[in-house]
Image (tube, rainbow, N blue to C red; front, side, top):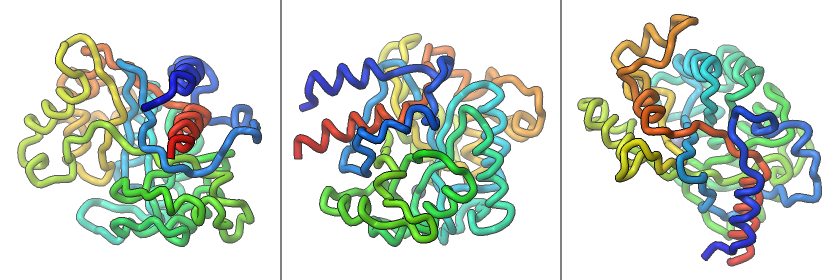
Length: 290
Ligand SMILES: [Zn+2]
């Protein structure tokens, strides 16, 4: 059970993307007194009506185009990236190639889009410190920030694994992993955009995602952290509609009426980005209950 205190803190620290200081910034993260470790928590929750878009397993040929579109519309998103994803079902651009590096740098210059750590090789269930260090080093080198979010491949996590990960020193950077990375950040809403079923029947897939996000009452968004994968054309089609290619490549494109983003807006979902402090507070309160 979550303490009243932690809920109050989460509520008080909340802000929307339309206010300043919502993205972890130099200013907010200088609060060294806050616990900055990677912790066990899986229970970070958005407020009702708030939605956060997260995309795993990139970068890919879609990632930068999608980030530019979302940035233009002030819709925040987090890209949980792998240094070199061995799973080649989708359309990957690895972080360890010049093209992958420039995608990370370009997204880094945006104000509403964040790059984050999803492990080095996307080995299922990998949670050992050495499985996150190459991605960590590359993020710090290509996109210097005070902190980054972390999501393990598959979202798996055990409390016993946090100490070795927190204490591991990032090679070439000489910083403790737990002082730079915050999480793990998991998700509330998935419609399995990666699955064959979803790729075969986009309409049903989109309806399922929207229903889970909106809840029972239309025009009243339930909200949550949404999980997608920015490595499939079908995922672009799922969230942007049939004309996704035109939408991504036209620098003046609006949010298509026939898209999941439009569906969410019509149901009063508010796109937000949590601050590093909010995740930390949620993690600290969870951690105290171990
Ligand atoms: Zn993944």
